[in-house]
Image 1 (cartoon, rainbow, N blue to C red):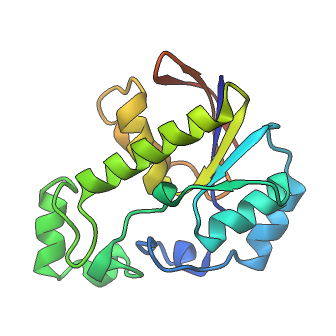
Image 2 (tube, rainbow, N blue to C red):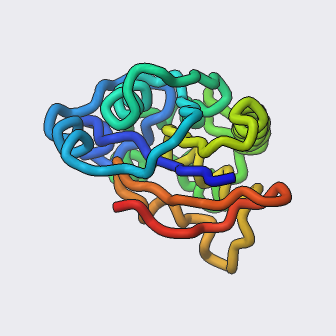
Length: 187
């Protein structure tokens, strides 16, 4: 089964390189125009995070017929939400979180292990619902990092694969025997 993973288009917070999880921001007009100018792989089943930026991206690429999965939402960054590395660099809680390799729960936010389980469960439900048809998943960089850790054979250092996928970009994958194999990058 083919799976197309597409990161949502750019928002204001993405331009500022902020942690953007639970804040429901729209796409920037120029990002929406860029998405509309591109050609993406076709899909029969479209699974989408409920966040506005993902729904807008899905509508631009695939039209209005998609299926929302709550579990595909980005991680709730709690008190780090809508702040970037520079703004947080002096915060001792942020330093502690960085030192943990991102394993500690976000202050006032979500536990990374609970986030990973939520994403895994939603993805598996969507894959089952797709019933073997080509599926596109329009979601977030963090969502795809969680999926890559769970379902891809990664070499050391590759867990941050989706940091290099720009907004509106993604990966075309093959889903076989509970594993995702990358076939090609999309933009």
